[in-house]
Image 1 (cartoon, one colour):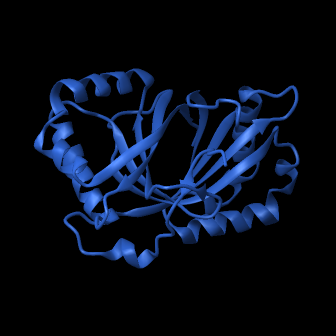
Image 2: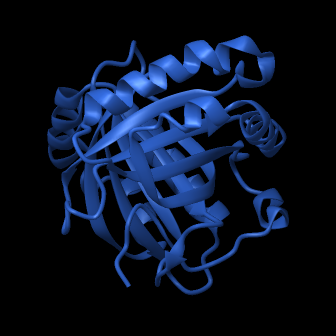
Length: 245
């Protein structure tokens, strides 16, 4: 079975998020839609539809006040023909996400009929933010990988180690964002425990962060501590990103 955006190995209960740990993860909701362009359509058609949709639907209610949108275009991966773009919708919690879905179901029919893409995979996720880039976003980039924890290790332990790693990395000049993502409905099965997201507010800044890792972070105490919790990370793929809301 081909992997698109995410695959799923475990269903995490919300109770597991509440385990006592060094840092308290703040979970948010996110929905990912992998799409193919309809004949004769392209990225700008899709982007223009999203912008029009904001004006005609999203901005007419306070339901979407805390709703953020980004579009992804595949850059590096094992099969770049599976989909053309990804729509990412970010919500602070499940209550607001499902209220938004309800509003769209009742009021988005006219706009939905004009969408220039077809959806080939839709994934509902929980996300734990580890670090966020400072500064205004530009055309950015995100890299995903599927990570498996060693036996006996839980997600909270990895979050603690990632948080320590991000704090130490920032002291060396790092300005990258990191998330642990737990796919739910829509994810296809796979042998891993979470998706790791590494992202930058601009494309060039990911290059700076990558060199900084090899020069200043590799082999640090925090890097070693994180590595001791993980079995492996695989299926690396990269996307160019644009924040639209």
